[in-house]
Amino acid sequence: MIGVLLISHGKMAAGMKDSVTMIVGEQDKFETLSLNPGQDINQLKTDLFNCSKSLDSGKGVLIFVDLYGASPYNASMKCVPQWRELGMDVRVITGMSLPMVINAVCNRDSLSVQELAKECLEAGHDNIQDAIANLTHSNQSQNEDDY
Image 1 (cartoon, one colour):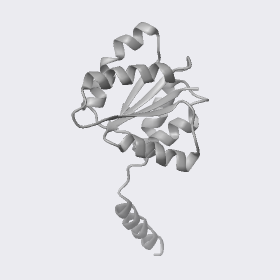
Image 2 (cartoon, helix red, strand yellow; image 1 turned 90 degrees about the vertical axis):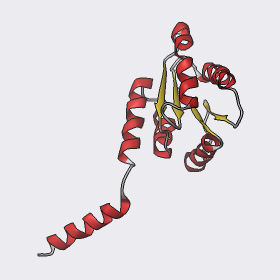
Image 3 (cartoon, one colour; image 1 turned 180 degrees about the vertical axis):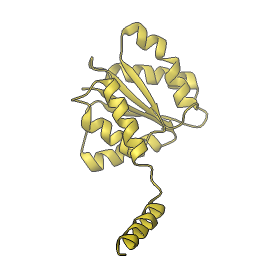
Image 4 (cartoon, one colour; image 1 turned 30 degrees about the horizontal axis):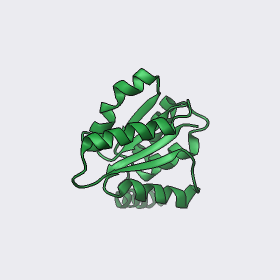
């Protein structure tokens, strides 16, 4: 089973995990970390590395962070040499969203980390929609079909 780790500023990761659990149930090898005000990024990096090691059952770890280029991302990137040294297969996906994480926990037994990361990115892209514009376009298309 691929481990899944969510990392965010504040309580976003914990809230995301709560939502995933509500939708798909309790999950093994599924953890969160939060960067809190005043917390040292080096401590976050240490916690992140230790958590990623505990989540890895040999199939790899998929890490979701909230923002590209921000502290959770930077802490993750600082772990790359250590992961490589240990032979861990880890992927870091930025801009985490609920559809991405649900996809990860539901499909992590049947895919490789690379395949799962790709699928999660597609789920993220597919679920970004302008709902009102889609509705307006759909209504216009239906009206055009009436003639």
